[in-house]
Length: 121
Image (tube, rainbow, N blue to C red; front, side, top):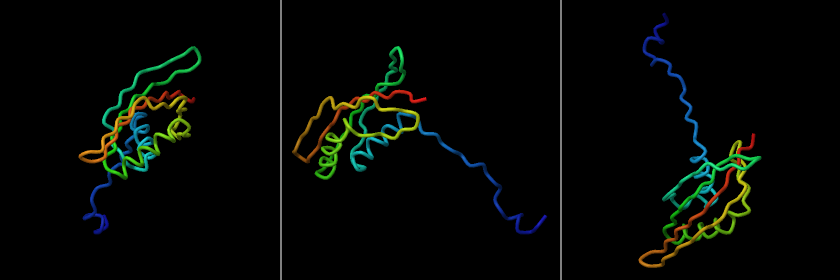
């Protein structure tokens, strides 16, 4: 055995963590908001029609501070027509359900939205 290999740590297998569909969707929404906002709630429910299957997602996002609120407003405007790139999924519908804003003690906005994702196989 070569002396250099005696001090080398053992090889470890690479661990690949596969993100779930929900995690991918949350990341895509935050990216649409320029990295601002926090996901305060996320639920999903199976959905199917005669020809399609998928999931309906309800998200609540909180934007705190002037910059975050402005990014949230841009996200609100862009969401309905945004072309998402989520592997093996098609966003068939994206709707803003509610928006709540406060100015004091600091600007804050809470956005509720729903998205219908269809399996694209």
